[in-house]
Image 1 (cartoon, rainbow, N blue to C red):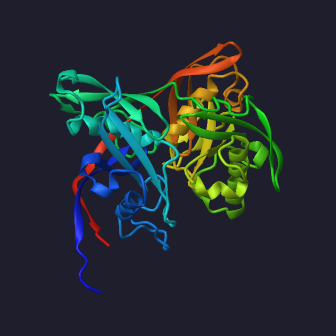
Image 2 (tube, rainbow, N blue to C red; image 1 turned 90 degrees about the vertical axis):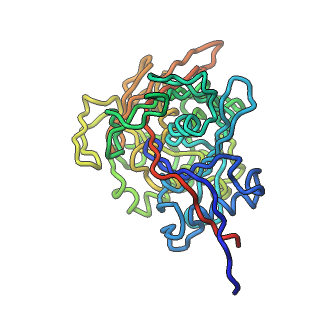
Length: 390
């Protein structure tokens, strides 16, 4: 075999919330990777180190978890009222596949800072000291995200005192608003109900709230599927029976939500929908060893990502949690104690998170104006990725 050179492509490795990924300016990508298709997917998979039959992504930038096998493409937006277009790809670890069907709420926190630092926001609109507002078009789902980016002396301020459970070190707070997060097609509740009886093969019929806000999510009661709602990663991810059960629930819910026609098609949607289980607040110890008191949270939530229990909480599922909690009668709302809930704090494996939502009940239907959540973001490395040309 002859010598195969490597391409050299500008990239930034960033943490956003409790995830991290490789960020690209659209204009910096190789020409055949600037548009959707096999060439783009092949390039990005090689950047991350997928597919890897060993499941480690040693020969790439990924770190072999759903939280770290991610790519982001950002470009200046031609859409009125928006600064940038943001496209997210969830890269499969062991399969030649990138799922473009949903957003990453955690990495959304890094898009605003990335856009400001790379000159994609008009300078006259930036704050010298304070907060700059960046309007982001989330291209995967066709929704607007408003990012409030902290600034100091005219540049993005990354360091600060804001602590985010699931992240070891404090940083500057980035506040996000997910505007009108419910799906346009099919509505926020695809079945038309806030709670459904979901028939799951091999399991039976269980209660489920299936919502499409932030990301399509299937919420079930923890106790109904044999969980307490206080589980940490090892207790679920080491249980093959539990993982298979949760994937079966995900497939059944995806069919009911109209995302796939048959359950055996679920493999084409690894990133969406999500499945999560909820429970009333209970004392537990987080993955860092910190005690979480029942009196400090409104409910507990555990969510699955790419077939595994997430170590904290996906930002998009936090949006779904906030939206569902604000609507009376959903399983999330019931677990939080019912009533009108404009803001809740929920427990997750790494700690807790506060999320707010503005919802209205108009003409017999629920609408959510926006969901707000705070995250943080930081540049970990910037420069060039090297990718074999063949």
